[in-house]
Length: 488
Image (cartoon, rainbow, N blue to C red; front, top):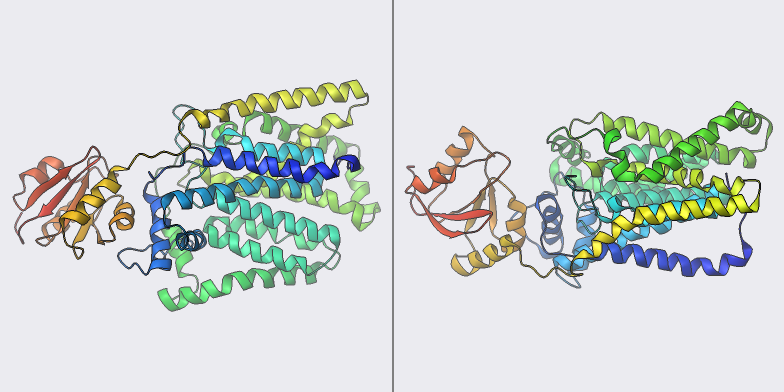
């Protein structure tokens, strides 16, 4: 499935790749906004804990640290939500470059170009979704899923390059990046575990594996030691992070696969599968693995590995009780690489006219797919709107002492970030919530969302409680201040 390189076009490759990354970045950064919700704001608040010494609220005890470390570094230069979004969009855009490099080593330039374009401009990966499809933004979102995907693709490229060059030391760099992928998102662990199988395809397989593991430990050990010192266990943050994965079951990943990966990518995947089965039927794989040299067998092993990665990860994420579309982003590297290889099969057609026609069809289908992504440009490049939480935070900073505590049962990381006030987490609903409300001291501020996960407390109940006085109303929430101790 690997095509021959075009030597005459090598000089154009850096220019084309720069355009690829530039276009991928532009479409992702378009519409950058200050409006972000719970999980995104957590990483900004954790960044303030790291860089600015904030101690009013932190979730570093169960959130991966790397993206917050990245934001903390950015905040030293420009302390802004915009800055974090821009950097995230750039990191996400670089994934298409690394995917091209990896796919080129595995399947050749044509397949690599198709794979990279699918990652760079498919609607889901840039943050464009069909009506009624619920998903967090994947373009410049402050969540860890897309940056972790970039690191996984980078690690894959480094591993394939180490195999191609038949050198051991580069496996160490791949191991370091694998460790960073875990620190970016704990959910990367299944994919990272599978990628550790690739060094076994090297000539000095055990040496390559040990060097890769050593690089992984270089990245991980400082964090594990910190976890032990701060929270009492080397893996305590991982355990707590897994325990905090909760929510509704969500739609089956198989059912929403066409939305996430696009129909053309799934067609390419099916073509790659059929091509592989046909070659297997003719016995070519058997001959390659048992009668060929190590160099000839390696591409077959890599392709088989990609299929295994895809199927194992799909099975793993499919068994999760709580499903969100972004959870299956680790499937993108093997799926898009195989899809690119399948769509590039037109190069094997016997006549030039057929190859040209096949190429035109593939390009047309890709353009038709990417037209949907242009919806990203429907609004302003920079959304200057001020979120209600930001306005309310400014109001509180102007109205109450800095020592005031905020009591909340929903979306508290947002106010932690914008106010700098100490946050008290309240139970989400039920008798425990109302008991906690009675214990709010005089002077405390209680922020009640009109629509929260638990649907409580009831605003009518709050208004009837003489201990609380409305300070200000917003469309999404009401700010109350406690005026007396006890009672209620």
